[in-house]
Structures are given as structure tokens and as C-alpha cells.
Amino acid sequence: MRFDRASAVARPDVRRGPLARLRDAGVELVYSLGWALVRKLPRPIAFGLLQLLADLAWMCRVRGVLQLQRNLRRVRPEASDEELWSLTRAGMRSYFRYWCEMFRLPDMTREEIDRKVVTHNEEIFWAAVESGRGIVAALPHMGNWDFAGAWATSRGIPMTAVAERLRPERLFDRFVAHRAALGIEVLPVTGGPDPMTALTERLAAGRVIGLVADRDLSARGVDVTFLGEPTRMPAGPAALAVRTGATLLPVTMWYDGPSMHIRFHEPLERTGGQRQAIRELTQRLADVFAQAILEHPEDWHMLQPLWLADLRPSHRASIERQQQRRRATG
Image (cartoon, rainbow, N blue to C red; front, side, top):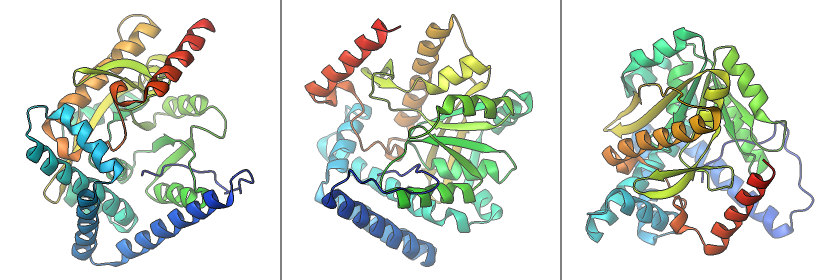
């Protein structure tokens, strides 16, 4: 339930049937109403309303809630069923807090952002900025990544992000405009030119590229071990850093009361040849993310299947076939 990118000008898709278009219109209406309401309500009422909705989703055991519970079982294997269910509730509250903050971010001043953000190892970030090599900031689905981007841009740091083109497009365009208002440039992964060229240019100019990097269950993903089980994560962060010489900087986030914490981890340095380096760097990113999630599991917003064991057999077989074709073609 995360919207990231659409085209600059929405175009109707004549291939979509009336039911699909009706569903898109319904989704757009719900988000637009929620957006307007959350931005206009006093902060305590807005956050209370979103917490109520989080509890409602939790009590109804909707699909995303049940998947979050399965994911958190990997994080807390020793937890009782009751403890795990309580942790899942906290996770849903954190997830809805993300949405509430995201809707309200454009109205926040730098002073308000400063009051809410607590940084750890900030000197690592500024050293990477001063190097002039560009930064690939790799983040998991934790805390509020939009808030972290707003914190950086409020300090004059140019930010670029990438995201897939999703539907409904008009609402998607609104989210792109929202991030532009925060000073975050968004490039499409799909439906346009290959973003790697543009990202390489941005890094050469010393920009920060923010990539959410803890899930890629496609044939392009890199095999990693994450919290003791096999899965795949995006090759993009490591590949960009290896090919451009940019700093690969893991960043993790979590909530503590009214504050949002941002931790800058030590940069990950390349070892070995290009392919080996991409595999090893991606695994090291997974290890950093795993440790942060173990420390703050309630702020990990992973409501989708993540581990290969959770996929349908047909899905796993499809990935394996695609991988075989990719190997055959080099």
C-alpha cells in the first residue's frame, strides 16, 4: 500500500476493464479524502484517527496484517502467539503513523522537522557528502523514509529516488508532486528510459540517491540470507556504487515516542570483482538491515511476502526459470 511513482502526465489505459477502472477511482477517492482530512485536522486528532484505523485493520486480520505477523515471526521466533500478535499491532500503528506523517510533511517547517528527528553518526553522512563521490543511501522499509529525505533536503542536500509506475496514475502523479514539494526528485523505474543512466549522472554530480532496498523477489534480485532464511534483495544499490565509485551508505530509521531516529551506518566498501562485489555488498546490506530490524521490529513495515518460503510454488518456479534464462543469455 505504498505509492511511489507515476508518469508526469496521466494517460488512460484503454486495455483496463470497467471494474479495474472503478477500483482505481475508489482507491484514488479514499486516498484523496484521507490526504485532505489528515492535513487539515489538528495533529493529535489526525494521529489518533490513523491509530484507530490501524487497530481496526489489526482486529480485522486483513491480508497485510497476517503477512506482517508471519514476517515478524522470523524476527521474534521465541515470542509467544500473544506476544507476536501484540507486536503486530504495534507494527500496524507504526505503519499508519508513517502515512499520517507522510501526508503532513509538506506543511512542516525545517524547525518542526529538526525537533522530531534525532540522528546517530551524522558525521558519517557529512563526510560522505564532502567526498563528492555521490551517495547511494540504501534503506529498509523502516520508520519514515520520506521524513529522512525531507531532513536531508532541508539542509540543502539534493535527493533523488526511484519507484515503479503504479496505478491509479492520477493519484500516483500526486505522490510524485508531493515528494517534489519536499525537494525529492523521483525517477521512474518502469514506463520510461532506463533509470541507470540518469542515476549515474546524478551520482557524478554528487547527489544522494535514496533506494528502499530490502525486497526484490524477481529474477533480477540478489540471493541473500536474511534473518536466517533465503530471499532476494535488489542489486541496484550495490551495482550503482560499484559501477560509479559512489559511497554505499546503509541508513536505518525507527520511532521513539514523538521522535524519528535516523542512523547512518559505516559505508560498505567494495571487495573483489564487479559481480562478486555486488553479491557481497548486497548480503552485507541485508545484515545491517537485519540487525536494525531485530532492535526495532515494530517499525519494520513489511506487509508483503519477503522470504522465498512464503511464495507460492508456481511463483518460485517462475523466478527460477527467469534466472535460468538470464544465465543462458549472459
